[in-house]
Length: 172
Image (cartoon, rainbow, N blue to C red; front, side, top):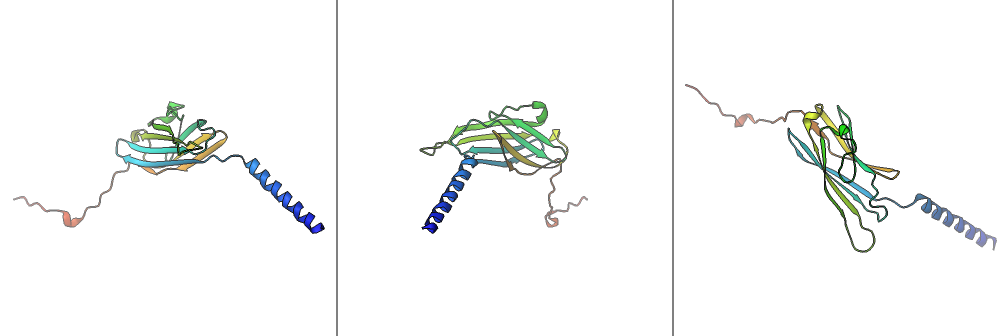
């Protein structure tokens, strides 16, 4: 009898503890960030970014996004989900264009928000060197971050030449 009461008490305490942890942790914000290098030339570097917010709550409450470049020069370019840059003077040499914003409907229930941007970097506005990139999304009190591709500015393209492919021209 005492053992049965003890077992029920332990089960009740564990149940209350687990439910309490679940309530305190709150809802999860499933957010996916992807950034790819699309084009790199002497005149421009183009990155495509995609942000997918997968929760049904507060889909439109992204405060702002930050494109970060760390290298010889550090740049933090903050912009709104509309693509408008918060402080243009902090983003010299960077252009951000929103390419899509849609709520994806998988059927019943949640409708993820899909945001896509094209980020163009003008290399002449940056110090030569290699930069790591990342995209941060500020949503409420949470910041989500994803590293992007590294980009190199100002270094010449090195091409390997096969000596067997060279031709000798004789002048008489």
